[in-house]
Every structure is written in structure tokens, then in C-alpha cells.
Length: 387
Image 1 (cartoon, rainbow, N blue to C red):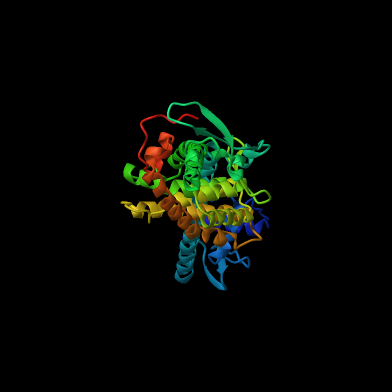
Image 2 (tube, rainbow, N blue to C red):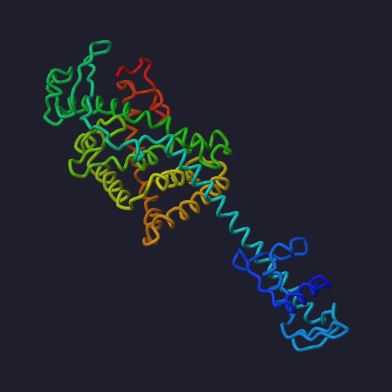
């Protein structure tokens, strides 16, 4: 409501022909408590509610408001209603603006949290892999229980020399020799992968919303999502020139060696996924956010609180959208292409789980790191793995 103080201010401004300026582009919120903070916006509001620059002053202080003469200090009912509507509209606009700002701040907080968690717990960030010295992975063949261990380079497996003095080579069975190679390679592949398990667990603990889930849901998400998250992390370590995959310590294995452990089709799909993911040119923060989205998959088997997981994943999706919008402004389809990787990644996870059946069927012949056996639900051998 326009009162005598507002009218007095307006009258003085007109009489003295004062020109005001605003430091906030004329967007100040003017209410009774703060009306003296910005004279420009205060004067602007006077005009907005109907006061006119074309005034007439008499002994009764008459102002001309929208062409109608009224006594000073009073406002026509219609103008007063318009002024109230204007104030309500402005208040709603300000509240909406504050809501948007608060939502963006919350998104930036999520981005920062995930970025810090990813850099702290992923061994395959750009900084950690820069200048990494690569070397062929060395597998160790155990000749017999308790016997000495003989180091064997993976190249020997390609030439077939690894089976020359193995226990199975005396039988002359090529199938048994191949099986022995597979066992040795799987055991040491597990050793190379195991450090990433604890890192993914620590990363998951810092994903917003994850720690609020039940322990059962947390365990399911980590166990069923680990391999997929690991693929996202290690994708940048693929080398399409020599067809190798390099681990955090610089050890690398070849595509042919991976095919011996899995099969040709599965490895081809893994390599294809990694290449296409790398083509999106994601930075470490975006990879971390995407890994968080992969972690929070409510359709995992036996999940209880699907609603809470979906809610947390939606927030991560919004944060990822905001981050990618900033970093890929000229590539609006990058986010959609990334989201299309989720079903492909899920398919790879299911196929990997199928390959683990071989582990479970041959667990008595294997010596795996306890953490690796636990994450993939493989029975553990009583003897400790020697590496």
C-alpha cells in the first residue's frame, strides 16, 4: 500500500529532478523494511504502482496518478489493487528465482562431492595415469601345492611355451594345458583387479544417498555394480594400437590373453564399449558422476528400497547434466549418448557374471584374493594366495 512516506519520497524526487542509479541492474526487491537501500528501485516501484511524473502541486498536495487527480496520500482502489497484484507477482518471481538458485547450489555441492570422491578413490584418473610406465604383466605358475613359483610372462602363453613343464603337459592333453593356463591367468588377473574393489567401496560411501540405504541394499549395489564401475574407470587405459589394457601399476595384458580368460565375443564387446566411451571425451568429474549413476541402479536383483535409490540417482543425473552442459556446450547430444551406454554396460555385467560361473565350478583349483572372492560370491580356498 502506498503511504505518505512513499509519496513524500516520490514528490521530492520529482521536484528536485533526482536521477538514481542501481548497482543490481534494477532488480532489487523493495519492501517496507529495506526501501532505503536502493532509491532507483524504490522510485521505479512508485512508477510501477501508478504514480506519474506529470504531477501538480497545490495547497492540498494533489498528485496526478494515471491522469486522475486525487488527494495526496490516497490511492484509487483500482490502482491499489494493481499495486498489490504487482507486489505479489514480484514476490512470487523472487521466490522462484531463489528456488532455482538453491537447486543449482545443491547440484554444485553434489558435483564437488563426487569429484573429490572420484579423485581420491579412482586409480585411473588423468593425473594418476599420466606418465605411467607400462610393462607386460607377469603371471606366476604354481607347479604344485607348496612348491616354488615360476614367473611366466604373458607372451609365453601366446607361444604355448608356458605348458612345457607344467603338470598337465605330461598328459599330452592340449585341453588340460589350456585349462591350466586359464586358471593361472584368472588368478593373477584377480590380483590386478582386487585393489579397485576397496576403492570402489570407499567411493560408494561418499555418493550422496548411498550411506542412508540399508546395509543389504548397499552390499547388493556394490557387488552387482562393481564390474560395471570398474569398466567405466579403466576404460581410458585401453590401447587400440597394440590392443592392450593397462592396470594401475603399469602392468598390461593383451586382448588375446583376455580372450583366453573370457571369450572372443565378450572381449570384443568390452573393447568396443571402452572405445566408444572414450570418444565422448569425458573429464574425471564426469566419469565420477557417471560411475555414481551406474552404482545407483534400483533394478538390481533383491533391492529393497528402490524409491530411495531412484531419488538419489535422479539427483546425480541432474548434476551430470549440469556438468556436461558446462563442459560440452556445443555437443548437446553427448549426455544422451552417454546414457545409452547404461544398458550396454548392464549387458556386459550380466555376461561377466555368467563367466564367473566357471570360477564357482572350479573354486577348489583356484587361489583368489579374499576380497575378490567375496565381491563375486566365489567360495574361498583355505590356503592364502601367494603372489
